[in-house]
Image (cartoon, rainbow, N blue to C red; front, side, top):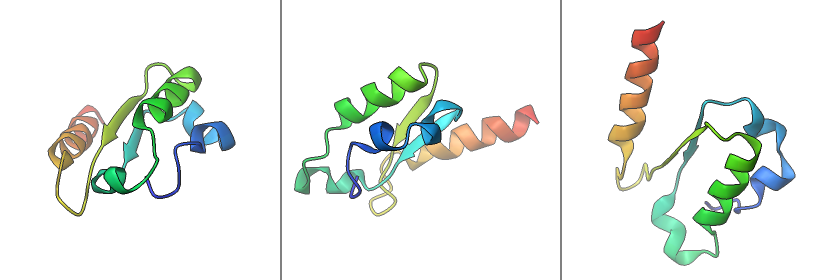
Amino acid sequence: VSEGDDKPVKYPKAFVKTDLVVLNKTDMLRYSDFNIDFFSSKVRELNPPVIIIPVSCKTGDNLKSWTEWIKKLLKSK
C-alpha cells in the first residue's frame, strides 16, 4: 500500500506469472490515495486467475486467508 497502486503498471513482469499477490499494510489505506480496486484490476488484466489477498500484518487482518493458502499449497506438493 505504501508504495502505490501503480506497481502492476510499472512492473508487469512481477505480476504475470505469480499465483498469489499479498497486499500488505491495508491498515494504511485510510491514510493514502492507494486505490485497491485500481490495483486489483491492473493485476487481473495481467494475470486473470491470480489470487489477491489483502492483509495487515500490523493488525492481523486477513492473515488467516494467507496462511490457509500456504497450507493448501504445501499439501499439494
